[in-house]
Length: 142
Image (cartoon, rainbow, N blue to C red; front, side):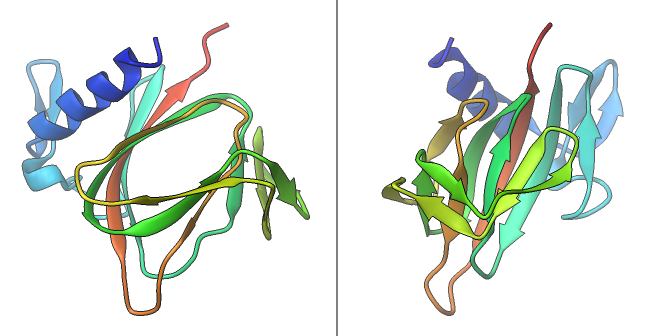
């Protein structure tokens, strides 16, 4: 299953083109019709684009896994460990000021990342850099 999710995300990301017709959704050049802030919800998964120009907060999703496909830019991704100063920000969503005892790795264009449900994660960007990525949020099935 863990290998299937990143492959599915890559296939989805490479076939987006900007309309919803014939039962499919297509985002032209990887951009939602509503722009960078747009997203699409499909019951068991959600699609969006994220663009960062500064460090993110630590995040933990209790009912959704994240699959990300980096389109441009680079960042340091810290994952695992424990969220520092955890605060609920929405149902089943936690954010914090950082991650204690996480694993660091550099990510860049073409990388596909799968973050399982319940795993803390946070992006750090070097000054003057940015990162843009497709996000597929896979909702936990009952």
